[in-house]
Length: 367
Image (cartoon, rainbow, N blue to C red; front, side, top):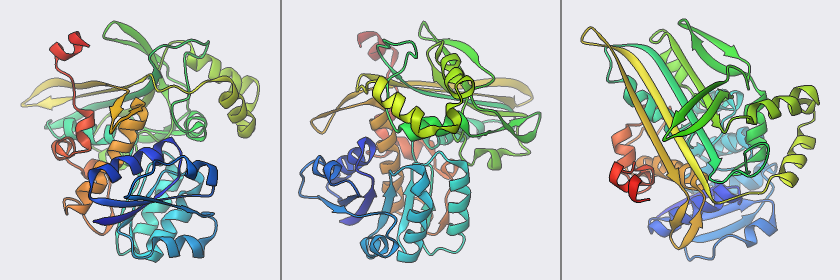
């Protein structure tokens, strides 16, 4: 049995602990500074808790020492402190961050580390890069890679057509920070909330617009190999316009804590959500211009006796699948590991990756 530390006792961290504990192969310590949140963690023989301040470096290193890996489900601004402690404690490191600068610093830490550092192990960045790279590998030459992901309420009931499904800090960060993209073969930065488009899937209309971090390291990997590469977040129509008014017209991009307070007190959370994954790749194969698309919807469901939201399932299952592959020797045990280095078939075949399984047409019609 491998001993794991999960940093963060929120919705995602508690779900990670639950999945790992119920697998029977991991003993999990959930660490958080909030005793209240830790008290809500599921009682299980394979789960223990530790109330610590991540800012206390000595305490964090002591907690990590002797463990197999640390999985960070903490806010992005704590990423570097956890990664540095992991390097010093000589444990494997995995995180869910979408923050571009944090990932660059993790890469630098990994260069001197004795263990594996695998950032961005969630849905987007994370699984989306695994899918995109798998599709891209089927072409002789690439033209465009377009990645679209959204976590949406099944039953929107407010002007934003949105409910809180994961980290409010993360949502705000991806709506504000610059976004990487490849345009006409050049790696550039484009503004968040711009380049809005509409598309339909299964008869429902959605909008999509630039957000930060979803590409992970794919821009670096495909630079010089593709003409167009971009990532956009999916929402119901009308969402982007209201968020731009809040951030730009009311100046809340400069008052993130105020915006966070507004969103968390005005938008209810929900477990009745759907995660949409839509990736389209075009390029040349045997001299012909060809396009391939991956489209999938993951819904909330009961796992290990508890109803979990779709974003909890996809995010937690993704990092657990990567951990499992690392534990089984299917990934490098040292250095910086990119999501696109992970094989899609191996990921989906894992006991955690199977939560991403696509429904057949018959199953869709039945549901």
